[in-house]
Image (cartoon, rainbow, N blue to C red; front, side, top):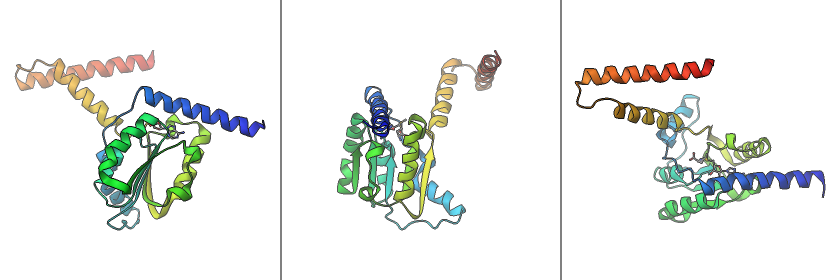
Length: 210
Ligand SMILES: C[S@@+](CC[C@H](N)C(=O)[O-])C[C@H]1O[C@@H](n2cnc3c(N)ncnc32)[C@H](O)[C@@H]1O
């Protein structure tokens, strides 16, 4: 076996292991309003990108359980395609999107095996929460796929998991709500919540400098 072939099969084994971890512990995050097509195309317009026609096409590379895919399919009547390697994530995404019929498709495959000619061309491509879980060679492959599948004037959203800040803020709000005396006067509740925030900040700072 040549070194290249063995390296490639090692890489596929690593990818299969990563996907299997999502089978074991599904990552089922809610859709993210900050990356709605309207918000993304609005932001792109600030940079001189003309918005696409009404029925734009969307690709989600690493769609997970398909929450964003389902959400986005309600904003367009164009093609909506998600891809992922986790079998259970793909099944979940396909079930979620079945109501959109043939225009919405889930491809269960390793990024390494996706053929841009078969996927087609898209106005909007998402790659959210994926680059940081994939090995460098796969990251390069993903960026090539995005370049090959993006229509001229299309927009790509490449990011860490975009909803982490919202999840953190909601968690903090919930924790503060539970930690204050809800029958105390509102001003006293706010005071207590502020002192809890200061406790958390002090704890974090002392951990960072220790
Ligand atoms: C953190 S999840 C993000 C899912 C989704 N984009 C979201 O934001 O909810 C990362 C996803 O990347 C997928 N993934 C990792 N490596 C992959 C590969 N080589 N090919 C296809 N999908 C892969 C995983 O199965 C997982 O569903």
